[in-house]
Image (cartoon, rainbow, N blue to C red; front, top):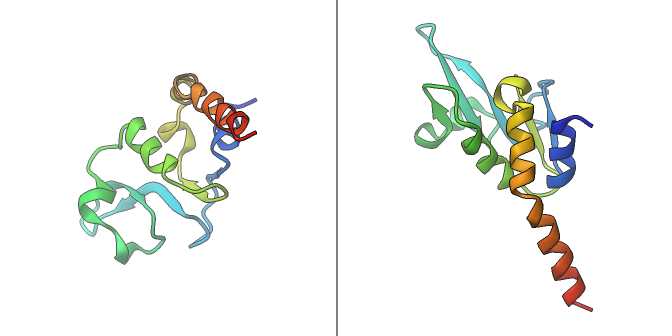
Length: 116
């Protein structure tokens, strides 16, 4: 199974690279400035005029950890648009994140068992 699919299952979210205007809860992509420069954005509002310039816009491609931090803030069932999944969410980074966070599943199972 592909790493992105495993990540989607773990977090119970959908990650897609097909743009569908305003049908996502988080966008990870690039925008072009008026003078031809490219900036990177991680935006939780699907409208350009609602960017939080201090927190959503990056001069360089945002690090994987920053991307995952924003993704893990999402609620179950939410959707993420990523314009280049391989660039922003490389398999080796996802695999390492899944390994580092596999205990989270065990904690949830333990919590369920203590309720009985």
